[in-house]
Image (cartoon, rainbow, N blue to C red; front, side, top):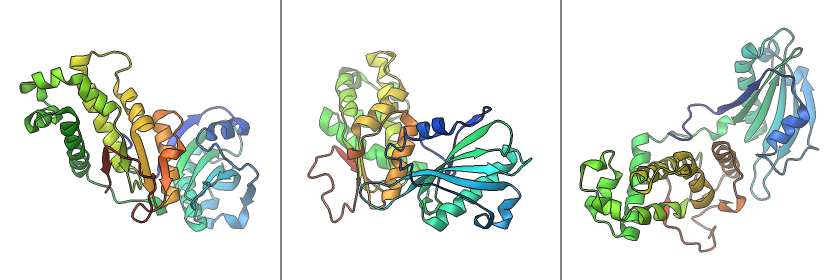
Length: 298
C-alpha cells in the first residue's frame, strides 16, 4: 500500500561521490522552501554519548525550518562517521543517535546526510522523531473506512444502485452485469477525479495514503471502458488526488510538516500549504466553511 512503512526512517538515496553541501541543501530545500540557513552549529565530544563514539565522530546542523504557525521544527544535519568506519557499519548507529537527538531536543524530524571521515560516498535519510510513532491502523479497517465513505459518495453523485456500487468496488466486478458501470464510467471517473476529501485529524497520514491508493485503483479499473491512455496510470491518479483532492488538518504542527514531506516524496511535486491547516477541528472552523465531498478520520 502507498506510504506503508514499518520504520521512522526513509533512505532517500546513496551516492558514491563526495558530498557537495550546496547541492545537498538545494535538494533539501525542495522539501523545506523556508529553510533558515543561519541556524547552524557543529558538535562533537561531550555531545556524543559513549555508546556512539566508536562509530560517530561529529554532527553538524546546516539549517532548520519552522512553520509560520504552530510549533514544529525540521532540521538538516550532517553526521560524520569515525575514521575507518564504513557507512554501512555506521548507519544503524547514526539512526539511533539521531532518534535520541530528535527526542532530547523535541525536534520533529530531520534530513540527515551520513558522510565518511575520509573517502567518497554518502547517504541521505529522512528521519522522523520517535515522538511521532503512531499506532498502525490494520489494513482491513483502512479499506473498510475508505471504501465505505467512497461508496456513499459515488452512489449519491452518480445515481448508482447498492448492487452496482458493491459490484464496482469488488475485485472481480467483471463477473456481474457491469452495463451500468460501462454507461456511467465517465461520470464515475469525473466524480473521483474532482473529489474533495478531508482528513480532519491526519496524524501520520495512514487514511490519506489508503484513500489515495483506493481512488487510484478504482480509476485504473475504469480504463477497461475509457481506454488505457498514457496519462491514465495509477501514479498519475495518485498525484492528482494528492495535489487536487486532498485537504488535511491536525492539532500537531510537526505531524503536518512530516506528512507534507512524505507526500512530496510520493509525488515528486510541490504540495500546496493552504490545503494543510494546523489547529483543532473540534473548536475551530479551520477551512472557513469549505464543503467537502468526503470527510474521514480515525
